[in-house]
Image 1 (cartoon, rainbow, N blue to C red):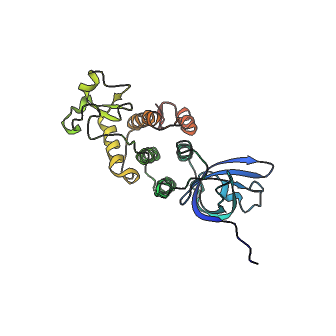
Image 2: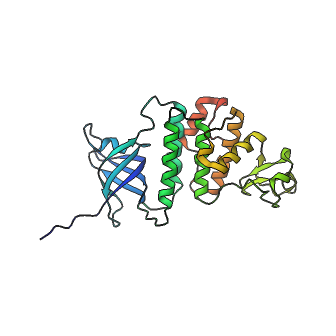
Image 3: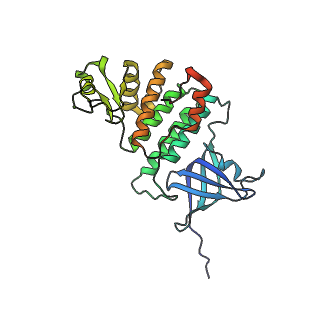
Length: 279
């Protein structure tokens, strides 16, 4: 009589978080290309010679095999291999902080539930964004890490369907090209750019002035996302302004968002010269 094999999955994944479990095991949160968010238990993964140990380090892109039982909250990690370790060679404080910040954003701003089946391709799309971000961040020719992270944030907003509106005033609908650039504001509550007249009329809820250089950066991210960050350069003041606008926008529109702890630490470490996403 034949033996029925247990269902299993083999897929690319991003390691988001890992927690100790028992004396030697670990519980790991994964964003997978084919099955969305999955939590697995990696038996004995914290032992020095465990073959699963390299697969449970947050931030790594891995190819993993795990059980696939919809009735279980935790699947069993069976094996796999490391595809990319973004911090494998000469990591800097800045790159490490932006990597950990991205992991926290993806882990916190997501649908509830451990195992997510998504036939629309949304999981693969989000995984593709994360994959591109990690490869760009870890590249020796990486552009400004702060701008790459801002591009990642923009991509995350776009996939939630709430990317900022930059072409029109969000209050009156007039095209930006016909507005006075010197009085433009950025309003998280209204959803993007706002003209000075609407702001003076009381429609501006917590909006902030939008400088020309910051607008150039936001337009590049809107047009090309992560690819748009490759040729970008910005002064520290502009990076702080863009980061502040995106931070407030994310906080207003994404449930579960808060400033990632790694970026808060980076801001504290750099003081007034911070390039982090700080308000």
